[in-house]
Image (cartoon, rainbow, N blue to C red; front, side):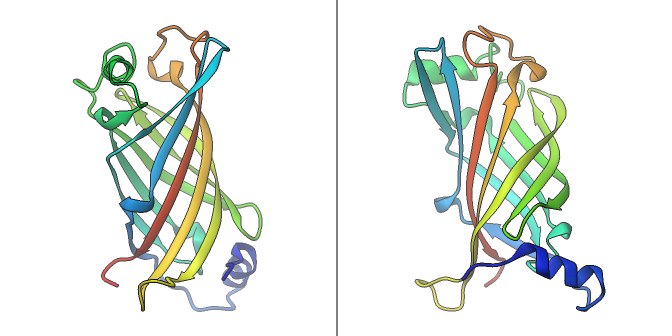
Length: 193
């Protein structure tokens, strides 16, 4: 079942539906990934991800502009499938996990851009530095789980880019990609259901 963002939001704007409050959703960690890629000197692209993360999500499918999310990533859980490189990424040259163990994203606004897409803006804190960043979000599917009776699932893909040098990670930039593409695949369901 596909879910249209725009018509529902428009109905809310003209008062065609009673206002409702966003409710807590929980992250399905087994189907959520934060993936990044880094250009290596123009010769290849290295892909990586973070193994541990969590989120606090308030979501109302009938008032998407009220969505609020706080995403927390365990910086030390970085994994590029090469242990020596991962240790370097954890060092002060990059993530400096000893002094900054978490990466956070705190949403500020949601702007609908089509029937199934939105722009999510919030503050990313990385290495103790905070900047506003925007991600393009696509609703992949919203509806009942075909596997778990009575469970509703919302699935999203979010994409964006971070300039790592803005967060004090200048090592080997720009030869080793300074601009890092980010992709988040996320599933969530109403809490307690």
